[in-house]
Image (cartoon, rainbow, N blue to C red; front, side, top):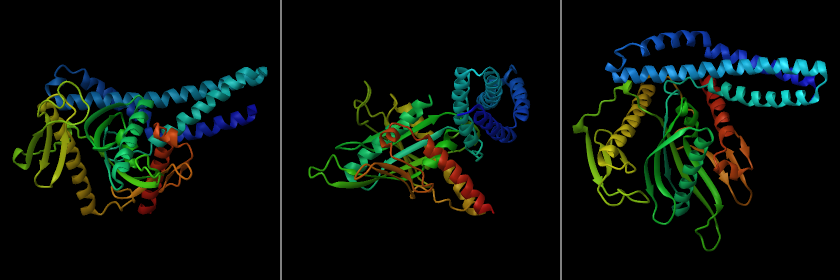
Length: 371
C-alpha cells in the first residue's frame, strides 16, 4: 500500500473519530467527571452506600470512556506524523510500521463506533445471561454447554469478569441451563443482540448411527439490577425452597441443602442459584437474578403500554443464528446475514463481528421504525 493510500486511510479514520467525538462529547463528560470527583472526595460519601457505589462506578466508566477517545485521537495524530516523516525520508520500515498502526487504529475506531450506538436505558450495565437447552434432547443440552463456553471464552478474550450463579447439568451430557453475569461497562448493550434462539446442525456424537441432528438453545440477556433501581420484593411475594446442589463442585457442594430456588408468586418467575458456598449467599444471588427479571418485565410492560417501540424480531423466541457443522461448516446470523466458515473460532469466543453486525442492524431497524 502506497503512502498516499495510507494517508487516505488516516483521513477516513479522522472523519470517523470526529463523528464519534461528537456523540461521546468528551468536553461534557470531563465536566461531569470533575463534579463526580468532588462528590467522591466528600467525607460523608459512604454514609449512603448505594449513592457512593453509583458515584464511583459512574466516575470510573466516564474516565475510561474519555481516555479511550482521547487515546485514539493521540494515536491517530502520532501515526500521521510518523507517516509524513517516513514518506519524506523514503523509509520503508517506518512506512510499514505506520501501516500496521493504521490497521490497529481501524479496528479500534470501528469498535468504538459500534459502542456509540449503545444508547439504550440500561446499555451501560453489566449483563445477566441465561442459556437454556431447548428442542433436541441430549444434543440440545450439549449445544447449551457449547454456548456457555463460547461466551466465557469471549469474555476472557476481552478480560471481562464472569460470575456464574447457577448451572443445571443434564443427565447424559451438557447442561439444562446456566445463569451468569458478565461484568464490564456496556456488557448488557453489547450482549443484548445475542438474545434469541440459536440453532445447531451437525452429525450427532450421541447417535450411534451417525445421523444428522438439529438442536436448539435459547439465550436470554438482561441488565443487572443496581441499588438505585429500587425493585422491592416483599417477603410475602416469594417462596424460598432449598435443595442439595448438583453437578461438580467444591467441598460444600452435594453435601448440604445450600442451593436456593425462589418463586415470585405474583408473576410465577422462578430462579435458582447453587454455585455459592452457603444458603445465604445463594439466596442473595437468586434475589439479584429475580430483581433483574422483574426490572426487565417492568420495562417491557412500560413499552407495551406506551407503544413506543415496535418489535425488532429479537425476542426470546426468535431464531437468530444457525451453526452448521455438517454437511458444510458455517455460522450465519439470520437477521444481519453476516456469516463465517470459521466455526471453531466462533465456538472459541470469536463472535465480535456477529455482535457488531447485530448492534448496527438493531440501530438501523429502530431508525426505520421511527421513520
